[in-house]
Amino acid sequence: MGYDRDTTINGYLKPQDLKRLSRRIPLTWARDCALDWIVIALTFCALGVSHAWWLAPLAVLIVGNRQHALALLGHDGTHCTICYDKRLNDLTNDLFAWMPLGLTGDGYRNLHILHHRDLGSERDPEIVYKGLRANQWDLPAKLPDVLMLAARDLIGGGLIDYKIIFEYSKPTRLRAYLWLAFWHVAFTGTMIALGLWWVPLIWYVSLLTSFIMFFRLRMWIEHQGTDTTQRLHLNWWQGPLLAPHLSWHHWEHHFWPSIPYSRLPQLRRLIPQVKTRTLIELISYYEAVSAIPSGTALRRSHEELPTE
Image (tube, rainbow, N blue to C red; front, top):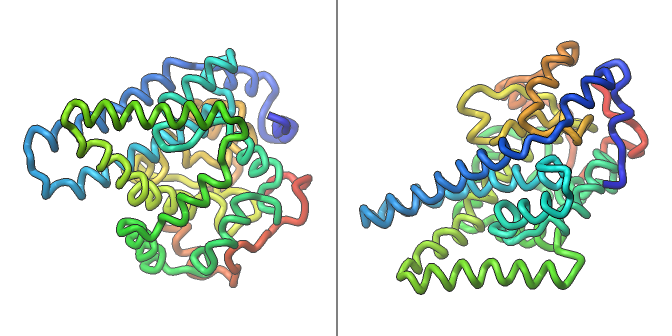
């Protein structure tokens, strides 16, 4: 992918452990992706069978949450952790994770490489994005203010955020645009032909509202208030809600992105000496930290490695 974080193993991880943990496990990715799609399908089925359209807002929340989960599977696949065959890895990742969200692995990978390489610096795309959305990412920040921004996403306040995400991760090849358009035309056309016009309606409403809300909340628990990555511990309900598919092991991921997400808990147990924060501790930190305006780079060079 054009960068190498594996050189940071000194003092933390033995090379043989890195090799063992980096083995691909495609069936785990496929299982979790299938479960996300099953939850989405059951949500649509329940709404269609019951005709309880007053439950549509709940369906939007559930679908948006699983769209966010698919994005995190797509993120992991972007690091070629699904399988060793890169073409098969990317095709699977695009069809079942990225394209349904209006994105492509081709475009996202180009963006994400820069995020890993320039983490926390002025060239980090996440820092640039937060600067564009000032003052939404200012610190200190109180929980009610963050939740208010999240609530605004549910009524369309995050439309500009989706636009920024798309523009920053747009495909670099015309062929990727064509396949992306084909996926959505085929999906929408099939649903309309089956008389299920409301399915794509809820899908796209979810994508532009609750998906962005969950995306925002997860960003708050990853790189905010640090020049590297928060090492966070989430409990049994916080993880699936805010950072599905173990993505709250983000500190570990940034050190060793070649390791599939499902093995990150094993990796964490090998590095007990680095402190973790609970969600409550992180919220308290955000409320008391010194002023950090949106888009502020806390690292001077991407050559500095993450330290705690």
